[in-house]
Image (cartoon, rainbow, N blue to C red; front, side):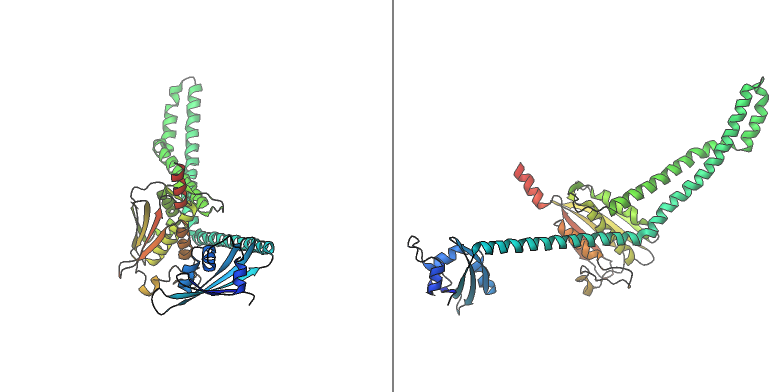
Length: 394
């Protein structure tokens, strides 16, 4: 055989080896007094024997002096506990440099494939986000048109008020220039009564306040929509108030909920949480929209938050019919949906699950019979790798 072959017991005792194995492992080097079997096991990775025992085989490359050898281990369990045999096949790789270059090439190819996959995942995430915004477009437009409508109406009233006030001001100016200003009092009183100046003076501050409120409402919706649709692959992890993200998301989708949902906020005291806020906002939106769609004519969605040791949790509980037990295990599968064709992509919960997993958190779901569905997001306050780095720095 050109391949080296060795047979040894589970305790490492060598039973047999061929010349090729002795050559591959440099038995001719008299300076190494260790038995041949020990030389092999010492060169193997720490988990090689364990993996071979559990799966029946292991394979990998090993450096031996200036050579690289390929080793394959096969395990055969004995009839009694602790008994067993390993068969090792060893093959020298000719041209170690070429082998290393091949490995580097394969590594580069895998890295490129990973980057393409990561890019595709980011595009999918953004596509689902924009699809959600597209579904909400009519509602968002309605939420914007309402305040714009009464601001426009108020501006019309303001224009009339200004015309009346300017007429009164002109009358005062004529009175000031007249030889006897008191002679104009009757005319001024007539103008005040005709244009109802007293009412204008009371209504004008309220009109301006309503208009300002409407403009602020539009500004808030546009800002929240911009924040929600924001996408940047290089978005950095930051410390965020999760309640602000919840309120921003509710503000965007409120038109979809307000006609049939009573929203209950049961917020606890939360610390600043390290996260990717725009991605968490998408999770909130998916869960809130699903809860709203699960409710029939009228119902309740309760949003609760709290802290548990070094984790925070956000819970969404609806009063809908709940999720059948046979579907609970499938709701996070990609493209799985119970909605009619054209009403959903089936990606919302799957993407949400991936986002929470990316945050080293989890989503728990429960749906007791007749009690609606409850989704609980659990997130670490600090991301594990960054928390460890912070400890090391101190």
